[in-house]
Image (cartoon, rainbow, N blue to C red; front, side, top):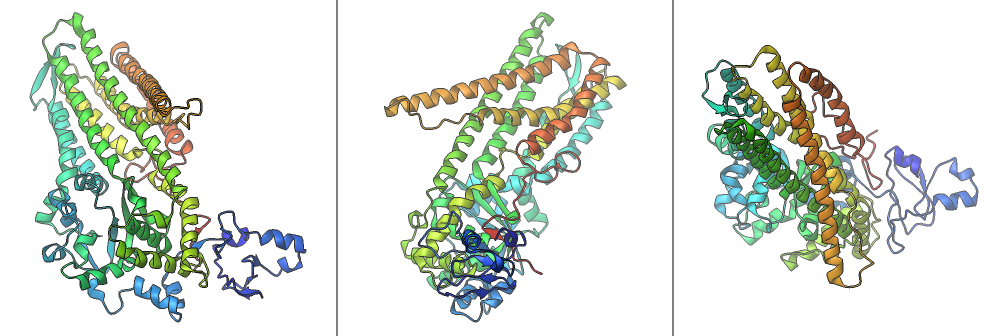
Length: 600
């Protein structure tokens, strides 16, 4: 069985047959669902009994295939067309005779005006007119309507607009940096260093970055039609009458099949809603896992808040240094900067701890997943959705066609419990933010600070080199590594069930005390590292000594990145050369119960 699984073969088992049957690869299948080859026939009865042992996830009442279910392609759907099951699957997954239903909405239409289309689930002729008939759908947006429209907007803008925001911000940074170097920009007096320094780069670059993230699609909608198309149920399903609405809902699986990717706007209730469970089940049966994108909606909110906090911190530092104070109070200025850094690190540590606990709770809830317990807004739709899930399970050969609906749903529950925690863990990632997000934000922040320093009258060639090396170290390495190590620290020692305390009150407060201690110690450690880095490079070392230290740090930076973002967490090695513009999640192309049929 393991040899065949490695080859990507799939086998159809007939539980009601006593004699061996032959699958598409010429391999015999016995009545227990075990696969035997010509060599296996020469084995003894004990060895054959060992090969016939069912997988651990199988229930005794479910006639399930040990290798789970396969991905349905055009060939597999066509092969099923002659059976009653094939007709139902074809009706669900094809647009035959109703091509006018295959519609998509331009990305600019979905994201303009703060994604106002997410405000209500009620469709109309006006909303239906915002979609158009398309040949192929770029992305299927799977979400719950109870989630705030503003949170969905932030998650989608961060996903789709991030690259354009980075490019425009860097172009503005280069333009302002060049003007600052030639003294063409206004300056303020830095009382700490007793000389004039620029400030416009720091003031303007981050607002440009945020403006592009939030409003790029509004500008695009005015001047250029968006080529990217999305499926959004309120726009692409005609809800002007109950009949047209039912036709569109019946083709939900076809929309999933004809979409290149699925974007899941994930919240804690996503897998408790029946319709979203059906959508992800259909997608996993029709597409490889690397086409699945999971966007936790609160992650985008934290990223925006983090960006604003960092920008305010850099500007406050400039303001504290520009006041007319005596040089004996420079220590007080540095103390204020370090205090702000400590407060920022503590806030991020709290968030990382909450997210680590939420992921643990999510995995725990998946171990008790059941389709029967999922919430359905309209209970009249429950039977139709459950029937569709059962048909998908049979069509993908996760269960035999002779299985009942209840057995198929139990098999689906088993697959979700055993496989989905690993799937979400791989797709969401161990780290909250990707390296590209942290590095780009760090480059804009520290690059703007270095560009403003070019306006100093004491900026020699060696000083400019020092500014460039500091920008590289702190933007590409220090900032991402600090937040990554902070998340490592606060994600450790998650509290289990506190058995030492009998009362609920004692368990609650002991857990809170433990979480608070972990967060405080982790924040203290990372703050100490940042303060030491700031004091060493800005106060203790001078040109050219700091250039040698910065050169060493920049050379060892990629090794630390490889260890943190790839070696420790299994992330893809796309983080140094050419990796900034790519995601660093490592996708699982094959799973024990999700395997593509060998096209050969």
